Image 1: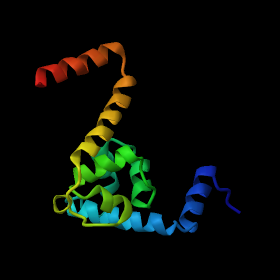
Image 2 (image 1 turned 90 degrees about the vertical axis):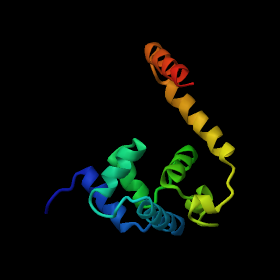
Image 3 (image 1 turned 90 degrees about the horizontal axis):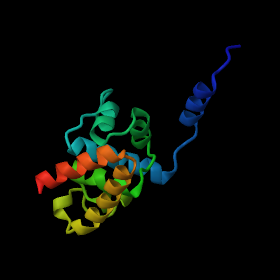
Length: 138
């Protein structure tokens, strides 16, 4: 009998355990949004998602299987893919964001928080470099 490593076992179990209905529906909506945004299905899709959203391939793979990201990440995903946040998160409303009168200010607040979180983790030197870059752009 062949022994399984812990990661092999967990991977095998994750295939057997069915996702919840919400996770399955989210995975379908994400697939539609990715196709709409021009990220074709196939082997390279996960690596393209990881690159586009600056996450690990494993995180991208989990998203495609229905694992829902954080609220801040949801906003970023919806904006970059050009789909409605509400549709991506819940399935309600129109998929295409320009067909929905969403308040961009809500996205800005979430993105500002995400930016602050990212900047907090930087060294003082890198924080100064980011601020210099932003000052030059304004």
